[in-house]
Image 1: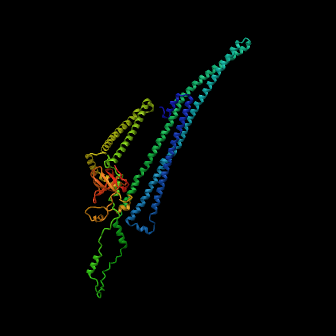
Image 2: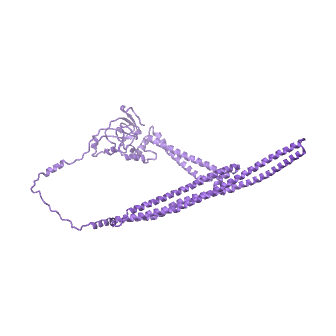
Image 3: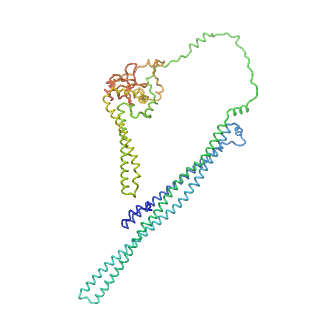
Length: 578
């Protein structure tokens, strides 16, 4: 079986030997860094568990000290106090807290022995094993590099001897053709040429033998030694991962084992609390402090008023009482008429969830919300499409290269992405339909759509009109909590009408024309009909509502987008809200 860690090395086996050595070295460096990182993670987890055990010990110590601090002292008055059921229950609570602290000590001891100690020993063994594997790998790498150097040296020697033999042959032929050269010199040149040819043949044989040996060593290196080393490193790394997973499971089990005992401690505390008997404690107090004396008798009345004459009649007394009777009366005028909107409702509109089609909003605001929702859905669709394209490319790669992965493993995810895209497209179509409906009726809404809008406003009036709540008709449009506390609501047919009758109405600052029909179902709003002309007494303060008046008795808020406002000249010209 080929190790996953060695696959990249086998892909490089078709390259020149020197290049393979470089790639192999890089793989060893990468694996060395990764395995060192794994050891660092293990040591970090050991440190985490060790700190947890220290916290448990510290917590247990503090609980024991707390329990000891409030234990009754011997030969003191506190011991007498523990005859009451409430104090006995408190003493039982202190004892149970001491046992509770003991369970935290058990957690610390078990984590130290089962996790910290075991993992510390395992890390030492892991470091030794890792060092041994990488030493074998470096040794195998050095061996193949040495064989490569020997092959290169044999090859260069063979090349040099061939050139020397060729030069010796040429020199012999030159000497043999020269008539001025003696026969002895020619024979010497011939022998030298034969010697060089023999050396070249020997070098050739040596180079051939070295080459065969290197090829055999290289095959064993890349197909036997290195895969075996990488397989051992992989198994070592997998054992480390399994070990840290088992330690995390033990971490949870150590806590779970003490839960029943801690539950018993808490049950005993509850039982002690239930044993508190107020009647019994009261009876103990009575028994402890009762005097046994009989209550004193009635004191006789001594009359000293006989020589005195009555100077004040009951009628005058009653008249004076009647004259001094307090009649509640509401105070004078309020400084400014506050509109009865509640701040809490306005916040609930901001935080609460409205209808899915945003029909609780005015048309323009609804259109913006719908457009924003359509854009968000389109972005989500694009993300899903990008993921599907990436998975499709990955599947093509797996099909072309099966060794890189199973192409069928991505089919389930592709099916999920397809379903998600279809759902998102349905959502887009739904919101686009609502958007088209809004955009189609914005310029001139039909009677039916206006009725539907009025019906929806009536159904969701708390959400629609709460955005106008918490407003104050002060000159700067500000609102304070003190002002909200002074707000007085004008309710018909009550004693509060006199309070508002004396108030001066707010001055008009312009006029307005209703673009759409609005059914004011909520308190503080006013119903208007399309085309109706009304007076403006307060501009939109940025919350989407304008305060208007029909006559002296009818005024309220309407959505700014439902009216066309014309301010007078003192308000710096006419402004239109559409």
